[in-house]
Every structure is written in C-alpha cells, then in structure tokens.
Image 1 (cartoon, one colour):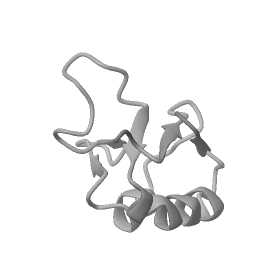
Image 2 (cartoon, rainbow, N blue to C red; image 1 turned 30 degrees about the vertical axis):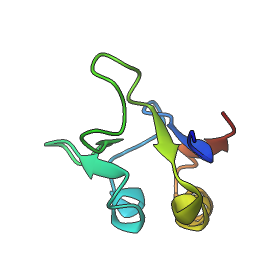
Image 3 (cartoon, rainbow, N blue to C red; image 1 turned 180 degrees about the vertical axis):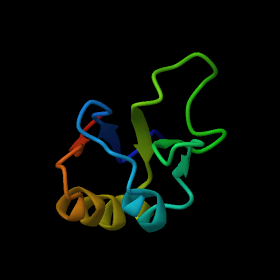
Length: 79
C-alpha cells in the first residue's frame, strides 16, 4: 500500500525554522542549515526530496505542520 499523502516542501518559502521536522520526526530530518528533508529511506535515491510520502498514521501531524508553518512553505498533496 502506498502513502496516504505527500507533504510538499516549498524550499523557496522555507527559512529552516524546523517546526515541521519536530512534528514529523519519522518523515523529516533537517540539513546543516535547518531546512527539512525527507528522512532516510522515505524517498528513492535521486528522487525529489521536496515531496515526502506520509503514512495514514502521520497524516494528522502533517496537517498540523501545514497549518503551523509560519511561512506557508508546506502543503498536502494526494498521491
């Protein structure tokens, strides 16, 4: 079974505050500058790391991250 949704990260809006990574530690990690990235194993090597698969169990936290992002850099997309 595939992901329930995908969390899209708009890196042009993000300023690396990290709230999303705190809310979704299983799905997101942060780079050296604080910007969110797909956690290891979430996307295939070489795949777009700005569209992170989210499980059904993580969907509520992902929606919270979207609502709480101060720069509106996140959105939920359906696969």
